[in-house]
Structures are given as C-alpha cells and as structure tokens.
Length: 198
Image (tube, rainbow, N blue to C red; front, top):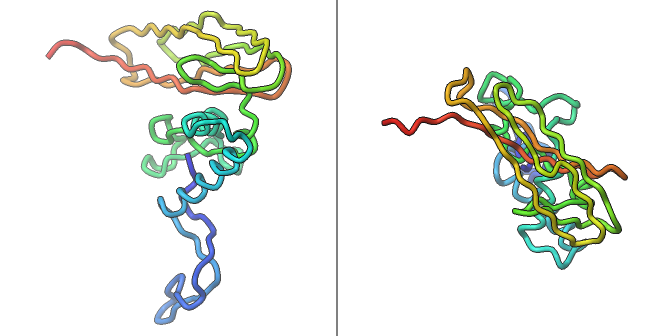
C-alpha cells in the first residue's frame, strides 16, 4: 500500500550514502527502501485523513486509502513485480498497491461488508467487473442509488468457476463508479480452484 522502495529521504551528512572505490560519498539525502520508509509515508497520509474526517475510524481511513489506490506507477505503466523478472504484478504480489492521498481525501464510497456513501448529497454508482477468463462474475444489483450521506447499501457478488482451469488463480476487479462525478472504488477479485480430495 505504501511506497517503500527507493524513497528519497533526509540523511545525516556525516554518514556515507555510498562507497566509491575506497572513499564514501556523503549527502544530505539518500535513497532508502523498506518498512522504515513505507510506515512514515502511510502514517502521514492517515493523519491528514483523520484531521479532515475526525469521526472516521482507523478502519474507515484504511479502506479509503485501499479503495482509492493506484494500480499504475508514476510512469503510467502497470506496477511491476521485482520478484517475477519485472513482469506486471498480480494482485497478490502488490496488495492494495500505491496509495493516492488526493483520492483518499474524497473516496465517495466506503467498501465495508456493505457500501457506505460518504460523499455529500445523492449519488448513483454503477458496478463493472473486469473480465476474468473462465470465470463468471455477477453483481446484484449492479446499480446503487444513494440519497444521503452515510446511507448504506448491500450487494451480492457471485463467482462461478469450473473446477479445472488452466490458471490455478485468476484475478479481476469489481469497480463501483459514480455517474455524476469522479469517484471510483475498486475491489480485487481472486478466484481459485480447489479440490476436496486428499
């Protein structure tokens, strides 16, 4: 969910950032990777959301960030999986992907066990499902009309998949998009085949 690779960060000027032959290179900045970079990034964005929406729970803030995250990188290309020879990452490899603070501030819809309209006024959302080869996915109803803020609606997602398919795991997305504006909420779909035989 948080970018944690090669983040430009402040660095103590008396500590070398790299070794060049026998000498060290010093700088006020360094490119750092890992949880120590991802955690402050997400914490800052969560704090901004909590200040903007003081009545939201931490779960609501997490969902706002997950449901409005980007599935493309800053070069407008699919996020790549470093562990798979830089091929486009599958959903299980990238999790909730890259958070988008601006979208997180205005999620429009919160995707709990039921959908909650967090925008102002009324909105109509239409459901679409990315095609998943060999899998039938249906959403009922595929249109939700919200009349007021904090109104809740339920829907049913059905997935049918034959027991034998070429791919052991298939991926897609359920997307709820508001007709009247810019809000889009995406949820990943993962379909697997399994056997009860031992």
